[in-house]
Image 1 (tube, rainbow, N blue to C red):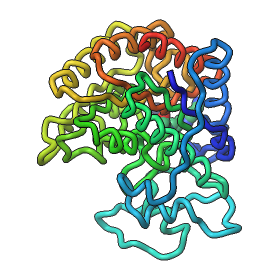
Image 2 (image 1 turned 90 degrees about the vertical axis):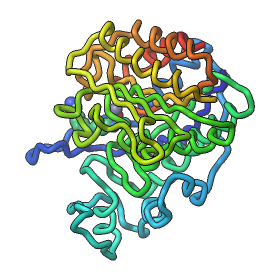
Image 3 (image 1 turned 30 degrees about the vertical axis):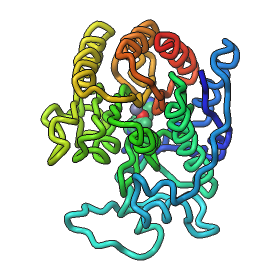
Length: 333
Ligand code: SP5
Ligand code: ZN
């Protein structure tokens, strides 16, 4: 199994997160130790052949993203330091302002996704990791694991947030689309709003997501069962929200429903957005999925019998994230 990985992600290390508590910033959960823990776990178990991604350039992001959006993200002014907006556009009201900080507020939808001077290297490295994984799947390798960081599934065509800057899984799906219909299965704890949005009107990419109920879980404003796609893509989006505290049996029942929809769509290949934040010990997620369940998830996904690219998304318990990924890849192989 190819494992695509670059340590460039270490260049992106936001120290603190604003989570709505106006009195205190918290340690940022999306930290380099996450990906380093996964890489260490795979290496120490001798799982996979590690391979550097083939570098990509800004223009390679345009298959999914708006040009002005990525150019702002990747080239903030020198000396700008840590950047985040303090005002957010409600776009039905907004015009596009000039000035990098206010413009970030046009493209960003939350306060937890800061841009630091070296973040662009990590963002491009993470996107390149997913794209190289896609190329390997097109070349006949399966499964392939793209150890992406930062994650990507909350980023849309022209917006970012949720610790995500560009959408790694969507970039990979677009690349694999050259071989035929693609399904994206998102098993991160959070709804993959960005990926859903990118493919919402497409009938060549199916999107299914199993996640915590957005009434009470981030990203709140999408991930409901009545979101089923639009125009040519009507029927090509499926959401399976779960109550907080959901355990293995009910989780796997929802996964089975998602997999039946994918089987009916009959894709040539599958991209799996893997978050381990549904794990019972995760500090951000509030579902109750066991380590053994990750193996069973891998097994059921493998039973579709399609080539699979796994793209790493969230998962914040650095002590168990490696084991959850190992179990999942074990089940998949
Ligand atoms: C890729 C991904 O999993 N993004 C998730 C973004 C979730 N942001 C909202 C979580 C805010 C909670 N702050 C952490 C509290 C730690 N106890
Ligand atoms: Zn997540």
